[in-house]
Length: 369
Image: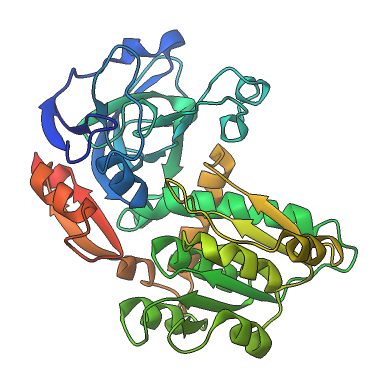
């Protein structure tokens, strides 16, 4: 069968290749589920992989199949599977167990291993292919009514985990009741974070580079959030005008925003760091002032990577809630701006190189059969 793959660590190596078709017996104890992929999503992680920034092939292979955002349909299940059945829509989780204590208790998203196993990223082939076989425990059911937008589950699951950790920090406060939030970045992650916070009833300011109006700013304002451009006001002025903020969600990937993001926090506030910037970006930081800002006002900085099964399930619930609410119904479909028909390696490479500007690009796999 066909798949889109790269040679990890080699820039511009995206290619279409034949790969072995998996079998149910690849998963022990009758727990295998065969899933035919409907679509895959492209994101910044895929772009970094395509640029050779990182990535690791599975043991014994010299290539890595891309794809960690997916939606598929179950076509066959092993004799021990009870969680899903043929015809069900599913999203596949990304992290796979390593050797740490957290991996052994089913929380590989908190793994303390130095090298993670992540589908389509590191040590495990991905989902940009015709079919996959996975253990049922790595599959999250999706209602049929959400088929058009469920491809957003994986990025939303990571936001869900990040904000869940922020909630856990806020729970230490006897009077904790967050009211204002700041989101930095207005790409897919920033948009989904803005939606999630608005669904919680928070007053949200989303801070990004590009001047309004454009598609992203329109989407933000449509759900009652406030879009603010760097060209309009600098961050200190924004904090003075609209802050301070009980939650700051850093989704821009700009490391120079981390220090001022701490200053944006209200006393007892939480800074949730989500984005990862590859490579090295030396910055001059006044660590004494940063330390004072955190310690004296009981502020907390929390990082978050990957997501647990329950975060995927909660993400599906959030998508369902957004689609059911008249104020946000249809909003998520506005994030899907480009669709590549079939496993077109050249078109995928162009998108990942930034030649096509979009919010979310999907690879429509059923259309390519």
